Length: 319
Length: 280
Image (cartoon, rainbow over all chains, first blue to last red; front, top):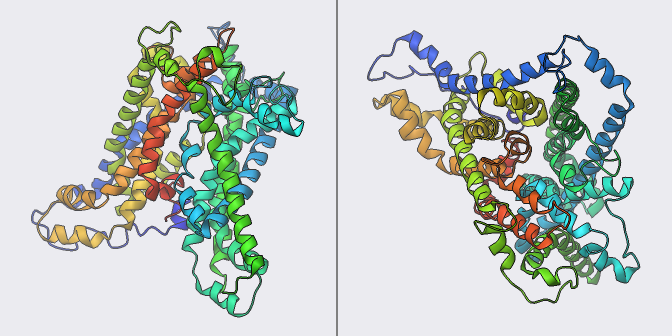
């Protein structure tokens, strides 16, 4: 993904032996060198892939705290997942959350970036603190909002009282709980989109805009025909990161609603946590995660390919 | 540029919209400060007017606090595991990033993409097997166990971003050094590394922040000895009477290190946040 947006020049002119080194290193040792450099990283990667492989292996059993001597059950765990309505409920909530959060963050983030790009005095001051919510641990952010959204003593309802909305049950209704979780996500991650979009805006070439101004193009026309297409690759990087991350949301929901009320905000990672850690059905819980992992992997592949196409199109924008 | 009354109105409206967003962004932080300064007896009876006190901070940070939550210890734990994780990732990641930037070789792209997929993998896929494995290996609730698993967070970040920094560096500098009789190793340590020092500093701080902010790993892989602030801050919410002032104080104490560090690396954030995909 990186190498497409920011062309890396690796390997370009970096062959050794282009000059006479003081000590002649045998050729076989030189060709071995990059491999030696990545050996530690490979070992560590292996150390992380091993538990992943182990997890995959576990899903073929019925390993649980109540069943320490597990039996091989083949693909039974997966069959069960897809036949249970709780999986489809979780999948629906997860998609709603991810699409909702990513959409709001994109629109709001790009909006904030456009406003900051005007570089007014107010904007320059505020830009310096744009990053703050993003650096707060999502779980802490959720705790903060939980205190503020408490229906009877929380400050949000207190501030809404003059508008006749003093009794909103923020996290106690299914729809409210989902919307509140998305709101916390938006609070934390809008700066992420805004920062990337702002970097994009600042790197756009100025000549097309000057030409448009000379031709008397209106603001909306310039925005739709010039700014947005050229900015799109940057926004898309942000959207991909946000969408993928919210598909595996855990912290915010764990701290804000614990999946409740009822099962209304049990997203896939929360479901896997409940199954594997709380009910100690290890195999079944991991199976959930493998399914989510596969989905995330596929979506990433599709989006990365789409990113390449978008970039090619952006490159064709007249300069 | 022509700017009539209408233009001015638009300018004011734009600034107003911006201020509105920042009120939304900053109010929760301000409110936590207010909550943390409230005395316990005024916690639920007032909103904005009260006699400020530092009692909450004393209780939260006090060694033998009557709440029974060793928060100071969690703070030290967060510090140790985050520093350890970043240190290990630097030692392992810098050579790998350099190799991936300077040589095209079989496996390098595979390694890079495997690392990137760690960034997007749902954490629980690895944690649940690790939870079982750590119990057997005695790594459960230890610093070493946490530092190991946090590599999932810090290593991909450091390798990807440092590769982009090394790639930006003209190879001619190192070649000149090689011509002068430097060995490859010397060229790396004396030429390449000093030139990417700002990048290393920035990515280390960012990796530290992400390690510090992690919640899932300590939640499942620690219980008391190696527990960190992100999990610890939740403990004040439990019990029959949630202690809002203590929770707010704990939340603020836990966000201070990342916030301070973030303000020092503003310039480098864009590349860091996008894994090198966007440069500013």
